[in-house]
Image (cartoon, rainbow, N blue to C red; front, side):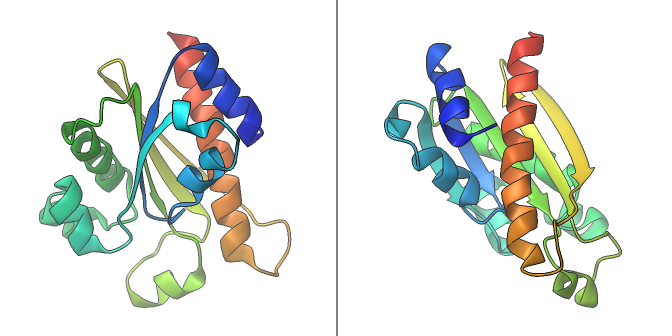
Length: 164
């Protein structure tokens, strides 16, 4: 789904979004903001790349990070719940973490490159998704995965909204 189509989807339903991003490092919010009129749908975007900021800003439990890692479904669920507690008055809260490059695996992870975790909070219900995204080619795999993650998130948000 294109950014324009996603924004139109939200705008037609009078919905707004707040994001907490790790793997995408602001690309999700930036992609939404790349469309004219984005201010009618995008409330806020927080980048919590650092584990300490996941704890400090979003209230992620340090034990969750130790037990499951920052790149996990458990962490993503805590991120989205913490984001919603900040009460940005958004209709949709979304959080995303994952593994964008092999360098992460060198120091602590056994998860594959391209592993992405997404949590969506909408109408007081939380939805969790995960996938493994493959780059198109071997050049600049990190950014290809981040771009695919944004598209995946757009699709999952739309699925959640349509299913209700």
